[in-house]
Image 1: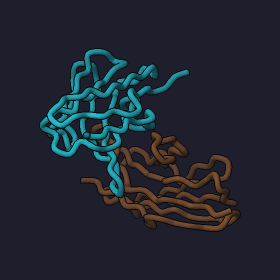
Image 2 (image 1 turned 90 degrees about the horizontal axis):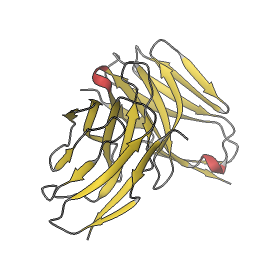
Image 3 (image 1 turned 45 degrees about the vertical axis):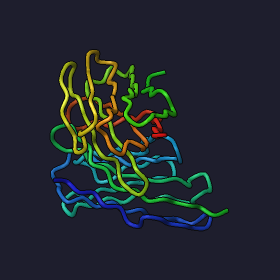
Image 4 (image 1 turned 45 degrees about the horizontal axis):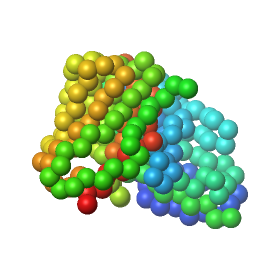
Length: 111
Length: 113
């Protein structure tokens, strides 16, 4: 069974700092990997989708990379802002149309 | 606007009652999913459906039931057999096939009183 791990579980940084969130998965036979943002009491908002054939995707201040062979993905957030404070989850999709989620990293950006 | 609508946002259940959570999507997606989220834990799959009139159990299906009579709708019933139903429930949908992303509703917070 696919297992997805996110480290660290929580992260606190001062505003303006660049930061990296990590996601690792045990089975490299994936279709894609998706990064989400979740605000307290809300649903998940998709940030970036990386196909298995891709190495990275960028959207504004966000950059996600994928190393399928080593089972790792990183989400890089540049010039962090207080509005970036949220929980970030990664999910991998594999056969059977199922998604497997990590437990998330809770990010706090201090003004 | 296309998206997934979950209702209600908050739901209170007395012990021994069945309750039904609604999930509707207008994205024309074939696949729909129900997840449960508890504090400090990742999302756990309850049920999923890849096509109308078909659905499969996920990792924690006991005490839950679903139906998929229409492509747009995938209601989840939390039965009295579910011993610890207080949680945040999330519905998602996607196109079937490998290289597609999941879209989520805003969730329903269920509390047993």
